[in-house]
Image 1: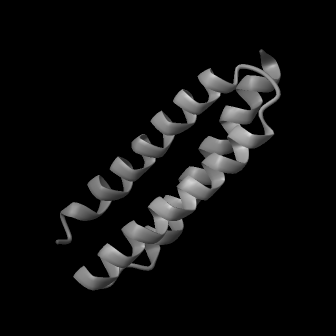
Image 2: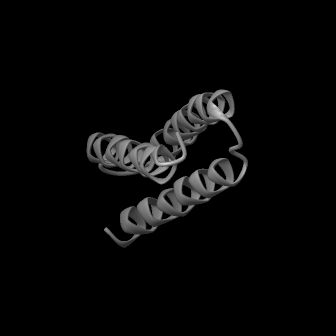
Image 3: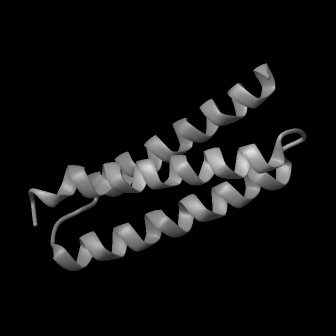
Length: 84
């Protein structure tokens, strides 16, 4: 269980860093859309890697990782919606 929690925490850190990086690079509406698409693609890539590397609770890991992807995509949108 500790390994599982550590994996989720590592993914949370990656997702948060990706959101921070993309937010910092925004300047206009086109950039917003490009960064949102890039963020979603990067989150998907990292999610696939984490699920593939999961040793236990693969179905639970998939669900939790997908939920984290949604959470951090929504965070990106909330952080930047006031600018657009």
